[in-house]
Image (tube, rainbow over all chains, first blue to last red; front, side):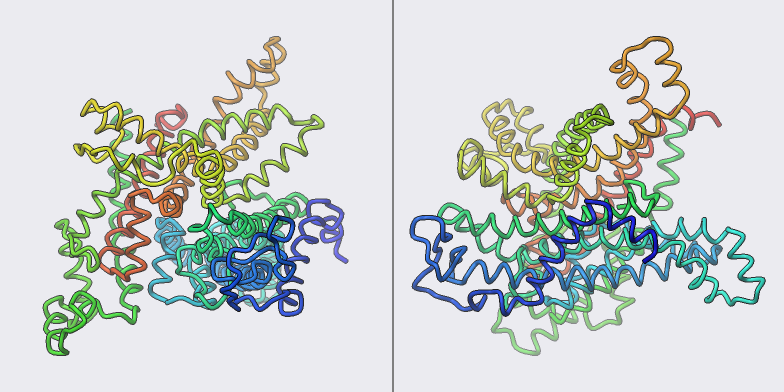
Length: 285
Length: 338
């Protein structure tokens, strides 16, 4: 095991965060087995049932039901699947696009760097939430569209931060030496520059996962997210908002789920930042 | 000094023009990907195919895309952003009516975030090396993980629903007539000497502004703390200690002043994020600003309105960046010597 990974795994932050994430991922993978009910099955005879520990609770619905009589626990579990899919693929996509552009920009410099830099400027002049909403109008709703929208908005986070790192690494003697040994530009980037930026990349990716979960929740909340057929925490909150007086639990539970998930990813990012010794300014997140 | 700022603003406007052009072209392309037909949407459902075709021609939708963009651009430069399909009113007017409310909310949130962030940052720094440091660290990460819309929901639930001590819908009590001079409700109510309106508006502003401020404050906290750490490596801090100044005096009079500069820059950069954070908070509190207008436009696929709002957000972000840079110039004497 590389020493950096061993060092990370000794950090309590990283371990706690990984355990929480593992729990959520297991929920997401085995949602069909864990969930007590079908998340979209409506039981109109038992709507807004309170959780089990309150008066009137029904053992069939451990965390109660929503305004359409759907099992809240099952919806929470299936929503974890939505959130994890978005977190994984959106951050992976944003990472790939951002990293490639950052390496091209930082390695070659000159006109390429200028063009990519201006592209980032244009993107950054848009508040991310507004841009993703506009993209969702153009792309239409659905899980894959949400992922695509987040990739299209958030690649700049990777590009901007990684570019300056690539710029520093590229000027190291060993990169020049590799070129002298007859490495092509591509080989030099992949074998010499990329490994040096990897710690920063991994840290950014973990922070991006937290952002992706929030953005997915926001989009689902305003009804421009994964669509009504797929349970999502943001959607659960939006549904529960009208019944907040009768059943506050329906609102608080998905909010708690978002909070725990985002905290885990932020904690992981913070732990990695410390143990991998990444010089990540606060503005880089 | 004023000349320098003038030059900076001039340069910024020059760079803003190509950015805005690119953004508007981008917006235009994205929105034309839509499978909806704005012409059909602005006619009653009983319209015949010929009528729709005539409307398409009238709206210029049968022309090639670059030409459509140029027409839109020419109109936009003259302040005409097209009619909103849903509201059947001028998009520019709708945006102009909603913008002041959002600026007011964002400004109030910024003040709250500043107070909480600076207070928290100084406190976290004072706790360095003590047994409480890991706890403070943990709290800051937890705070960082609560996005603005969760704060909005939590505050609404606690103060609006459970305790019922603060209003949580709209910008002012529904029974009060709203005076309109500048569009900024807090200013207008004072100009109109309507203290009742002013107080009601303040009450309505508390929850959304605090929600946004709370979500934004941990960023300021963490930047201020790390800037303070950097400043404390400087010789003049050691010098101040040797002169026998108290820790509190050193922190507030020497270190804070210098650490506030990077904090200000970053806060400025992030202000755009706070400004877009108003979007969901406005929706949650039914606050009549840009966010609610945007969400309604998006839900109704109201293209002209989305375009106008998108561009406005972009202009606001660029304007804020310019203001922050000018402030930086004012506060940092090193930049003034040329």
